[in-house]
Length: 401
Image 1 (tube, one colour):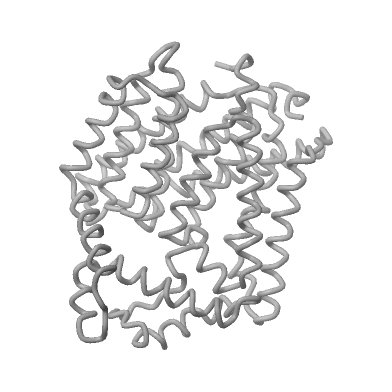
Image 2: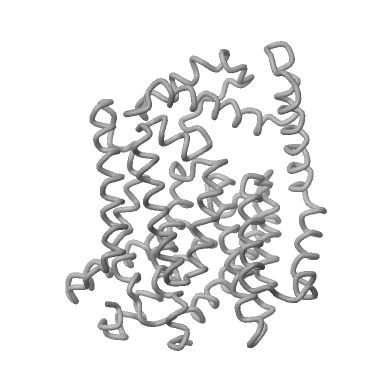
């Protein structure tokens, strides 16, 4: 267990994790350097101190191995390159972090709250620099893809709100509230719509857990509503709501599909990708189409689905449909088992912070293929694994400063 590791090494690991999180909002490449050192350090310490996993954690580990094994079988069957499962392999590459931190005997909540505050400052500084010296159409922060960075901002925003309400009864920390507003302001500049449902559900969960006074809810919600209303994000969301309403109440055929497509190109295309994916799953449920064949097969059938675009897609903008199409339904079922076991562990440990991260990620996967975006999937897995044992409610009497 981590408690048997000398404090020197214990602090060393947590400093590296903190730097990894912070530098995701400064320089992505540098954050990976800290993460690599953290993984190597975790491996060395796990062998040196002969750490043993609990039965519950072993189930999580073996479910990950089964998931990856099925991907290997599918890739071998389709004669595809192993690079197609590289992003999924991060569950294995980063497991040493879970191995070390899942049985942590010290609550590091105070330290992580400092990380949130520093990250918010760094993200704002990066935004100001980009706004005045670089310029952008949709703000993408340190990521090469806007949606990837929006996920990082959404996670940090939710954690800021969570810790604000958690600390409210004892000592209100309004800096956390300001941090959440900063993250949401930057999120609005990415103009990403797909994570809004996840943000709302997580906020509702937080309110359900802590049941704060109406005054406090107003203090938090009014600035968020204002930011939402004065940015382009509200217009994009309204556009999507109107589109979904018209799409579900009218018949779409070849003649009017162009007009419907233009009303909300992004949502229209995503719906068509899902329709295509469901058809492929019905045709090839066991081993899927093969990851290397998806792009070519989809492009050849675009007219059949009235997709109204010539863009080539290597994924289906929905992780659950995407993985089932590429590798078969067993891969999707095994992924769901991993999520179920993680959720079960967090609920048992009353680790609400990790549960929020998991919920946010799963909902985000419904509108985006996060496993195809390196930074978001690495941030999710690393943060979830490192916080898996540090935020247990059973450790609240052992909080470090």
